[in-house]
Length: 249
Ligand code: GLN
Image (tube, protein in one colour):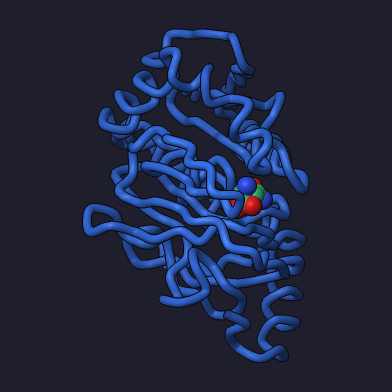
């Protein structure tokens, strides 16, 4: 068995160790004897998107998001839309997550028109939402508790054609108002979760990998791993956050 992973915009979208998600996905597949190939697709590069099983997009500040707009609308946006509708798996973090929506109105008043793969938009605020946070994924997305770090000015509002990825237990999430965090549409998973997200959330990492594996190999099941260290790191943060006031937003 083999999975092909595409790392979109590794040259500009990589905050707070987001690229660690790629390492985590790779190792969790290799530890199970599943072959994995990673293709990096920076600004200006093109590829046949139909060959990929899983896409990863990291976070970036407003500046980086603006830098890649012309490349996005020079073909990649349409390729991404087609891959989403083809139920390929996407993990998109913060700036990369915002990019999957319709637009981002920055706090400076500029509008970036994005991909529109997800029925959502983002509005910049003068106050940044920053800190360690935690949320519980919906049943549709595996029901695990996810811990991480958020730092964004954008407030994201979901439309009726997209579901939240989870419910905020501590922190701000999408907008600090409705207790939602992230988005789930077909096999797209978006979240504000830096850290990087996957290494200390092994349950969620495997949910994503299983989704990608099942799409290509319908009968394949991921064998369990010894996640003792990962679970200790996860539980340490859960305990720390549980001692703080529940919602900062
Ligand atoms: N530019 C976005 C914001 O500040 C995303 C930031 C990020 O990716 N951490 O809202």
